[in-house]
Length: 133
Image 1 (cartoon, one colour):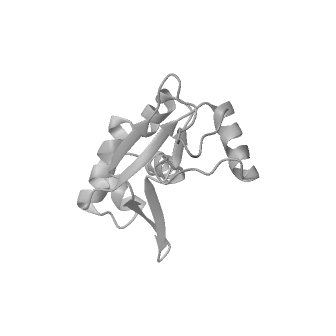
Image 2 (cartoon, one colour):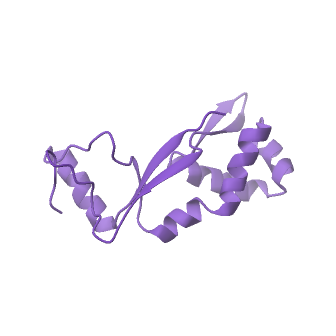
């Protein structure tokens, strides 16, 4: 499988809200380089991209399960746990769940992650397109 890099940012809920409003008002236009996926904290990102979930992604890539039931057999994880985990990963754009013949088939959309955050990072700064939050 080809490497697919996802840009991820960490931003407070309040700064994310301000950023979203500024975008909606046309006061701020995100650059192409900015993350498309945002987490509220390093902790929340670590939960979604945990070692267990990374192993799950590797199994999906390598073994290409034809359903969540197949994935259950490959991982020894309960179907309910897998469904919850996959829906969370789908919400963040890491996987896609495709429905075919009544079965949900997981597909990995991101294999590597470029993470942007810092103590003063509330939004990406771009000289010609900055926003004060």
